[in-house]
Length: 399
Ligand code: HGY
Ligand code: MN
Ligand code: MN
Image (tube, rainbow, N blue to C red; front, side, top):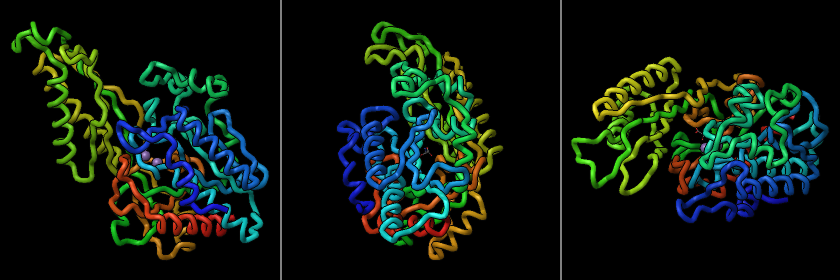
C-alpha cells in the first residue's frame, strides 16, 4: 500500500523540463508513455485488470467491466513546463483510494474503474480533452485524426505508432455505457481554497472555454534591406493584437482571454516574418458573451492588421460550453464530504466533457497559491493525503 505522496514521489523525475522548468509530458511522448506504464504497473499490483480502449483511454478495473460502473480518473499528459499535480494528482489519489478501500476489505457492490484520458491538455495536437471528446463523439473523428503536432505528425499516425487503429477510433457507446458515475479529483487551479481554506472542495461547474487560431499575413523580407516605411510586418500587428485581446477581455467582467502561444514564420532573427500564427484561449460563464468577445477581438485584430498592411484569418479549434456538474451526484458527494465547500472552476477537464453524457462530478484539492500550468503549482503532502482519503470515502459511499 502506498500513500498518494509516495505514488507522486515515484514519478517526480518523469518528464522534467530542464529548459522551461516543471514537466513537459505531451501525449504519447516518452514521458507520458513512461507514466502510462507506471500507472498500468501500479494498477496491476492492486489486482486491477487493465485494458486500453480503441481511443487510447486506459481502464483499470476492480471487478469485471460492466455497465453502470463507478469510474474515477484524470490525465497524465501536461502542458509544456507544467506542474507536478495537474492530472497525476487525480490518478495517484485514485490508486491510493483503492489501497485504502482494499485495506478495509471493501467489497464493491458495483465495479470500479480508474481511467487515464489521453491529451487532456491538447498540448500536442491542439484540442483539449481529445480522448474524452473521441469517446463521447464531441469531436469529428476525421478532424481529430488529421490534427497535427508541431512536427507535422498527424494524430492518426502517432496513435497508430502507439498500437491504436485510427479506423476504429471515435464514439464508443459501449465504453461510455460502462460509466455509471464519473468522479475526477484534481488539483485546484485557482485560489478558491486559498492559503487557509479547507483542503478539499466539491466542483459545481466548469467555465465555458474555447481556442482559436489567428494567423496574421504580411510580407516576409530582409531585416536589413527593408526600410521601416516599406514593411508589412505581422509581428508588429501581433504585438498590438495581444494588447487588444487583453484590453477587450478586461472590459468584460468574468472574461478571460489569453495568447500564450505565438509562432512567427519563418522565425529568423534577421527576417521580417511573412506570417504569425497565434492561439487565443477565451473563457466566460456565458457562452454568448464568449462569442461576442471573440467577435470584438476579431474586429480589432482585423483593423490592427490592416493598419500594418497585413491581413488576418481566425479559425475556431475547439469550444466547450459552460458545464454544470450533475446536481444529484454532487449533492451525494457533498453529503459524504460535509465540510467541503462547493467551488466553480475556470479550468477544463475530462469530467466536463463526460458531463454531457453521464453523471459527472469533481473534487478539488487545495493549491495554496492557486498557480497552475506552471512549475509553481503545489499541493502540500497533508492536503494530498486528505484528498486521497476523501476520494476513498466518496468512492466507498458511491460503490
Ligand atoms: O485548459 C484547461 O483549462 C485545462 O487545464 N486543460
Ligand atoms: Mn488537468
Ligand atoms: Mn491543465
